[in-house]
Image 1: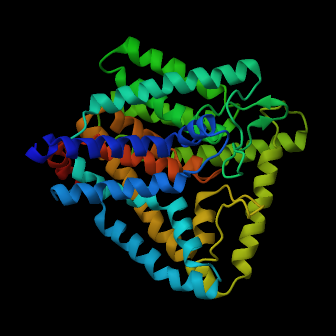
Image 2: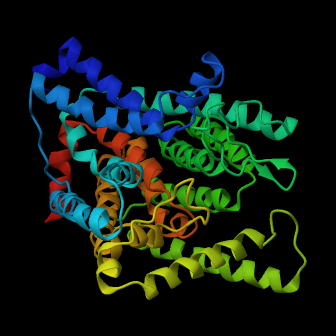
Length: 416
């Protein structure tokens, strides 16, 4: 390990980077603290949190630059950054967006996806045990709050700020409370539960009891979200974690994302079937699916009716409060924002980021690497029903911080 890793200032920056990445994942934590302390006001928004994650590695480079990118998909990262820069004139001139709006939208969608390589400067500085314990503590706290919300039928925490800068999305489900805990939505909470469930399975390799308890708590907390997509993601992530943890083949898990994609398609067909029969309970109700189909049809119509330049480089449409029609689909969201060129370039990057995590999980068998790869493997399914780029980017960033120097050397043969 480099001697700079032991410098107090350097280690403090590494811990701060970890804390900010966790806050980006547990995206309601800082707003809830602010509202509790400041009478419902939220002066520090999530954008500042994400930008801070970018500033920390820059400060660390001033202390001692030592970036090594072996094994990382740097070509794809470079293409994505170049595309975003090149697309700014189109979005500003042709689509009428202000430069501030363009940069804010980039922050909302892509910042945490592109920040991973810079965090390699802290590799080997943070103990993987600290990261795992942090995840466990966060699960216990958030699960306690979420389960209490479900059992009492009360949100318990703030659902919106007094200044209108923060709100919890879709927490009221046909009169029932969708547990959201310390997150901005039940979906965000469910994704964290899926990550924790996969982590529990990964930990079973060393301690069956501890891993099983973590899996059980994660499952109960996930159920409290009353969100079918969360159930689906939880199931897929846990299946994938089982394959990575207890499988023997070096190429295990390569085709599972395609199976998860097929499962997502099957869920859509099943929902349409139940809508035709008209006999469904609250959780089986297909109303949200029908709304999503209407949303997708609306936006596909916008893309098809746009000119060739807009098709290629985007309409600048993003998921904002001003946009009254949700997008709820990763490929559609990226295509609307930065066009088909952006969809292809970022699609390649997302695949390579998942492959990188899978390699790390198979070679090192680190529990958090397994959990992160398992959650990323669900993207073909999860991304079909919602935009989950921020959550996945935060998980990837934490996985980079969990990385040990020797894992880079070990992962090289897998690239050849």
